[in-house]
Image (cartoon, rainbow, N blue to C red; front, side, top):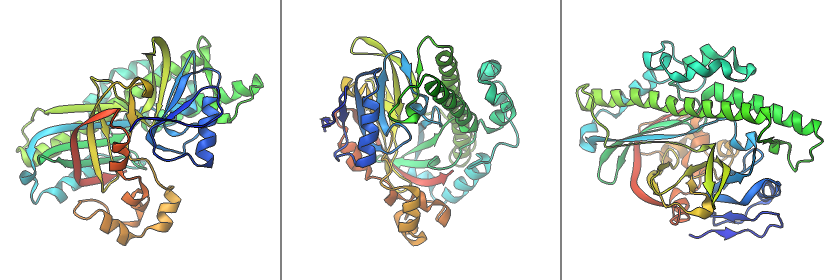
Length: 393
């Protein structure tokens, strides 16, 4: 589906790939961002767009010489990883429960961290720069090290999947854990203080920004890149453990070579060239989708997911959606659905089926097929996956 130019009276237009008109608060959020003086060309909204903090989740914001920390968000570098394995569905028979139990034993979820720290974690090169990070996180080095290789909570997950050819895939969703959250909060606080001191009248306090050339901008950019690298490596560490568990059951513990590996952010910012100009691109719930890029667009814990390749659509700033997008809040989902609904909607999947994950029920999310239909000009589907094991954060 091609984009629609929304009828908003803003200095910069808003292009939307969502097939629904924005509701009151969503409309206001889009207008607020598109009214900022440093926004470049236009704001792009992906098909999974929904309410966020400051800016809509599912928005791509290109800016000239400025960046908005709250638009990047507090889970810096949150994203997806997936690998295609040389195994088939028949090899999984009778092993799903054991695989799930081993995943839950090997990878901490929620607020938990690792009791033992593996060599790959202690050897990570990012620790060399830890002392350069914001002073507000300097006492968190031990926690950051223990959390490297842990899932977190909320909508983070680990899934064992099958594609339409019955090939086995490993997939997971996680970010920069507590250290990324704390770094984001420190810099968002600084941006808000500067806006107050300058009497900068913003449409929303969460749109406080840093201007390039300021020491605060440089400090945030440095910490942002560090947290993004931490998040990517966090996924690598977990994927390594996940892969070894599957190899234990399907290959007698023998290491195997993945047929395809993908690791992509969907909450982050980078410096890129668009329409011939160098800009800062913030993808808040969006994946980069250049022609050479592989991306991952997951559904909910009972729906399909997609491995995609980008089409370099310039109007989306070479981006696509990062998932199905929430249809309702977590609170509303808990009120509307029961454990019986969860059991029904996750039939055939080895996963938790209790009150603690009702807010992640498939019915709380937009239909993933609809979301995919709306971005046929942004990506092409490489593989369609369906989970057989799901471990939630």
